[in-house]
Amino acid sequence: MTVKYFCMVMRINIDCNGCYRKVKRTLLEMPELESHFLEKKQTRVIVCGSFIPQDVAIKIKKKTNRRVEILDIQDLSENNAENIEEQKPSTSPQKPIERNMFGLIETKREMPALNHRVQYTTNCHF
Image (cartoon, rainbow, N blue to C red; front, side, top):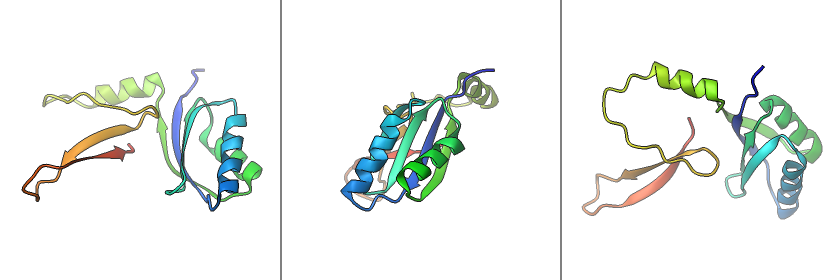
């Protein structure tokens, strides 16, 4: 059986600094997580590692007593990545994909309605 590598985005109610510390401490105590990222203002948590996504969400809920909502789960294991590449025929030249440290794709877009060019970066969760 192959080990599956997941990246999961969750929404957790983080109301105060104490809640933030409690969630952070819980994430640090979980050995199956390789990386985590907390967005306090958007109340989002991104975790990556070899785990079962539902089990991680349940553990966080039990240890922090906070509401946990799974927003997105990405299967980043090698077999899944190869299958995705085989399914997409490349008809146009593709730009290299830039990923941040959490495996999220960062895209730069230009705003066409303005007279001057402004670039801004967004995180795409596929």
